[in-house]
Image 1 (tube, rainbow, N blue to C red):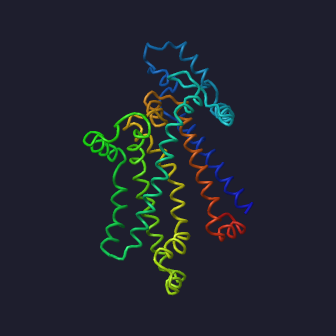
Image 2: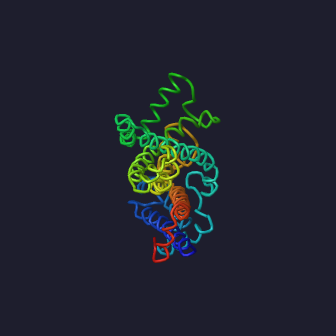
Length: 317
């Protein structure tokens, strides 16, 4: 078990380092003069003097070789220092810290909601005895996956804000203002959970041990929850871990649609003005959340299936 935990932890650290390195490299390879772009002026513009550009180039380290800048930036990042925002002059860490509670609140509601909706749909589809109803329920995830988040959000606003006037359309005002963004963010994730879990449940329900439980008189509910769901949950658990990255990415769109002040709004503004330190900080933070949740998912696997630890003793699982 210890070897399994160490191996998964090392993988998580490697993914985080790779995300930081790739982001740093891609931002460095952007065409044009990054200092002029961050200053909001082109190379031929008279709005920023050459002296000011030289000062900014020294301030942000662009006058040093790539490897020196990378090593220095990585060292500061390990201490939580991603520099200062070009647009506002504030430290990137403070900018992210101010926006983080709103995004965590949104994703913290959307992720459990997605799991509950997805698992409920999968259990309903695999437990019904009516063939037509099963086919209908199993077809819903395929339809839901094809719906873009921004369209779902706009439809929810049109119905529940403008027509029914049940929830506010924009802003961060209380629990009511969180409902529509959370549902918008949760629905694409829920259909993915439902699709994976339903297929896994259908496969597990045909296993011999499940047939034996039924032959011994176990009821439908007992078979679903006690015998089938535990083994069928492994693929769905993997999907839930991957959904953290999807939710973080979709939050950019959802927060923009509903005019919420969070990491999504900060990312949109930073990309618009090419605020490189903020963009890099957001990407690294997203990678940190992603690897942390997936590490927790990996560590939860042995609790559901001890054979994973056995495989880990022979080699990386």
